[in-house]
Amino acid sequence: MNDKYDEWIKASTEMRDALLKKIENSGEEDIQIDYKSVALAFPSSTPHASHFEYPRIDEQSLFQWGNSNGWTVRAAPENASGEDKYSFPVRFTKIIIK
Image 1 (cartoon, rainbow, N blue to C red):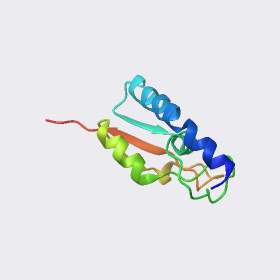
Image 2 (image 1 turned 45 degrees about the vertical axis):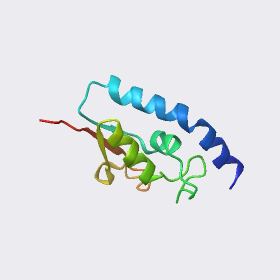
Image 3 (image 1 turned 180 degrees about the vertical axis):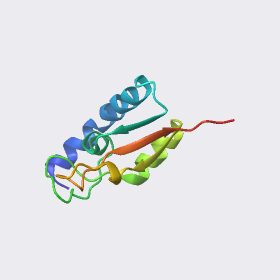
Image 4 (image 1 turned 120 degrees about the horizontal axis):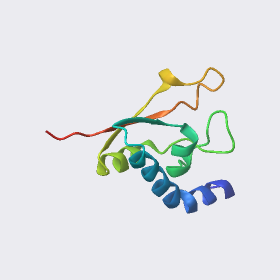
């Protein structure tokens, strides 16, 4: 792996805590978070297609984490900005048990 990946892995726990806090403090049941924030919380060993400053998202870890914290997670490419279609937002939707 490269040095950046090692840094991302070391910081990922702190980034996950910050991500969860941001989601929960929003008070929303459906919230979108920018790709970079999610990628730094769940870094994959696969490089990003168009950025060197952050990796691709480790989707399996993200989905498991989201589910265990009461959120469904999905990509929201329909809300990507025109300039960066490879760094689309990630949507978190609160799981409501009836």
